[in-house]
Length: 64
Ligand SMILES: [Zn+2]
Image 1 (cartoon, rainbow, N blue to C red):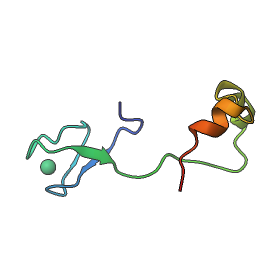
Image 2: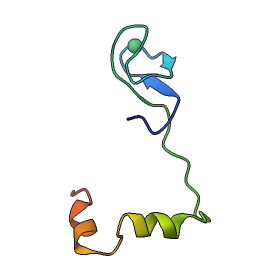
Image 3: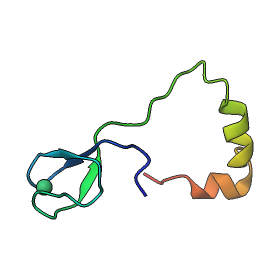
């Protein structure tokens, strides 16, 4: 599921609104990262939903 509406096709470099490119049928990805602000007022709620700080959350983080 695309979290951002605007998608960019990596095959033909066209813009679109679907995760499957309508021009070449290739896979399109989000055009830009999600907007984020350090003054995010919902950050506390988001951390609570993802159980930030627990062992489960820690193990779900990507590894280098
Ligand atoms: Zn394409």
